[in-house]
Length: 280
Image (cartoon, rainbow, N blue to C red; front, side):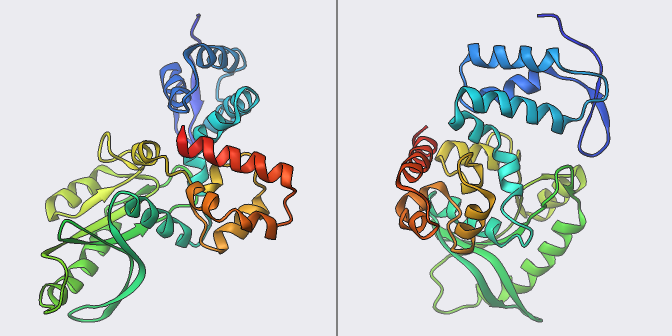
């Protein structure tokens, strides 16, 4: 397979060399067979031109994958699907809570904690193995943005304010606390360095290496409903407004599809898609 050598344009506007290996890895992550991946990579590569955007490459690969197998296309669009959780960021907090809940944590969303100086609304509280994790979520609704050092600086100051009152609680059901910062994008190197220095646990799309959001979602099969290729945008918004964030939750609350007026035949196709994602 002859490889074309030229620049493509990232969402940040940066020009980089086209990497066939990156395209192959993203397609392999969807669960598609090597034969299917090879065929799609070849088709996409034949249509590349200098300066093509990564968004155009993604859209072409997604379209080809969807024609082959919709469940693979759903997994392939995972990163984009998280951006689609909405501008407020609240569904993202519910999504993070859901991932942790299915990982054995006891979770609460939007709790008010008294600090030494002021009170704070905490995005997610998650308790496991005697550790209370105080979690703040930084949601970006636009591709290409990174979480810079200002964010962990701010989050750590909030955590330091609530930590002393938490430690002094007499009726606490935990032995220690830990501060977290979770984002759906990536951290800058300064942000990572600061987090490590002050002991703030950082979780992003691809960090920690091998245990970032992408790997956790795939390992636990906890896909957001926004990955669906069968649900419309209006239907996804309806479900998100009712705190149905995970495909797994929709399977348990399938009656909501009746409230949307979804026909029985289409309902069965949607539930089949949900089941395939949860069991893939």
